[in-house]
Length: 236
Ligand SMILES: O=C(O)COP(=O)(O)O
Ligand SMILES: [Mg+2]
Image 1 (cartoon, helix red, strand yellow):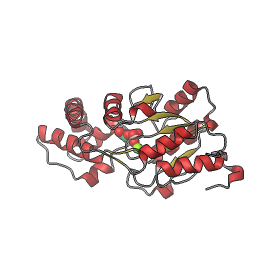
Image 2 (tube, helix red, strand yellow; image 1 turned 180 degrees about the horizontal axis):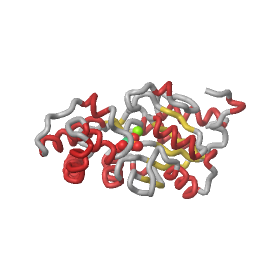
Image 3 (cartoon, protein in one colour; image 1 turned 120 degrees about the horizontal axis):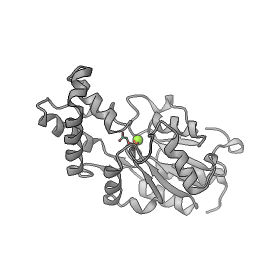
Image 4 (cartoon, protein in one colour; image 1 turned 120 degrees about the vertical axis):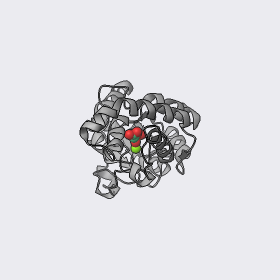
């Protein structure tokens, strides 16, 4: 972490929060939906530990990696469309049923709002999954803007969704902190010019979050809110 004097968090007025692995432990939902899809196409189930390494770069990437466990490149492409349709159907069927909030998520979002920050959610999850999930878990009301992996022309690690939020809020990237659990979030933030904080408990493609370039690792969203308040020297 840099010192308060040079902190990239000074002057931050909005936060972009990631969904999977940052606000919600959704891996059990992924596990159930993927294995129902695999059963439908006659394949053996995968362990949740295998699936965890594949999540983070959106549904298309996930389904290609899952099929790649069983088939060569041509076999993957041949089955991709049907597998994706089955996966989407199964995911929507169980969306949120096996997912839980990480500790201090609501308290952290409350604190960020109390510190005057505007909030957006940017996820690589398809918007048709993300929006009902946020509603079901009582999180939708926190966010002025929600972008899914298919809402815009590019998804994280591309900076476009983050830059779109900056435009929506009429703020410079340096005034908008991204908070996420993976190198995708950090790369998108760096490319956009946004400061970035990471949480250590989510899904980072099997890599340690300590190896990801960020402006700090925070235990919870509440810790992130405290850090932002501290560096903005707002007395609350
Ligand atoms: O669904 C994914 O690929 C990951 O979604 P996230 O961007 O919310 O972590
Ligand atoms: Mg994530």
